[in-house]
Length: 410
Image (tube, rainbow, N blue to C red; front, side, top):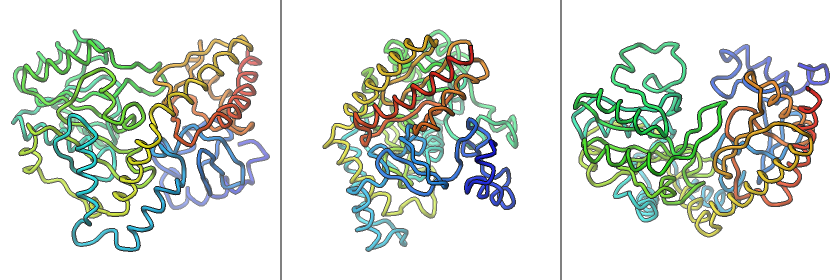
């Protein structure tokens, strides 16, 4: 850590955390995964602005790793949460808001005839797979190589603590490769329970891919022909691309879908939506959690979804993402830096040419951070409804510093 940060509040918090938390923090939150100079601890956030433990403020392009779809501390959402908190949150059973939210989701998501609620995206993807197996009486599940579906043994990207038996019934295919998908299905030999596919290909550290409509249709046709469930993992992209589900953009509807992240603007909630074909199976599986009927997060979700409809959130985020993308392209050309942008504008990824170890990406992000913008060198970023043109333009000024740093590496 540079000398000017060695005695920072963030550094002291990290030292204290390492003494009582294995590794200091876990998973993607561990600062070892971030470029030099990036903070690990934050004390305040509002709109699209984030302030770290040392008082530095940034225009944020990670949105809490996705949940902040309206922006931090959105007043409409927080007021709805406060009203429900004054009545009760985790009680002996759910509050009426559970039914209100279920009716709202079924009304706005075209494939949905019912829904169930959880707390995390992993809860939702795991429930989808379990329902598919219960409904089909089969075991095999097709997953795309490199896709992230959560952090439990059947799907975690780490093999530590995972047994071969945990993944014995997973078969792999390549995203957007219909021949690969069909070959994987053939190898299931009549034991195919489900195909689970992310809303778009968002593997870490590689160019993102939107779903090819022909591939999406092939996945739907395969599921129809075999009786397997088509599951869309919409945990990361849900409600940013289309309020009816991300694959509405390619005209294909799943049997089951998993949502979390943006559903309640930072309040912990996840949901599974499903078609009637799997309703009975959903009643037979046993999946539960002490906090899964928490009423505060459901009230926040109702307010979040209403605001997204009122603002036409996907359209606004797309417009701001396109402004950001165009500005970055112009700056990269000005600095003579080879840079690639991929993914939907609402969830952009920036990678640099000839940068296999992300050294250029780290230099770009560190310099931009010092200039007041929080980017990520390998993970897709996120836009929110709180990002306005002035915020994008300020972030582009910081990106100019970042691209200048990359240009100096030649």
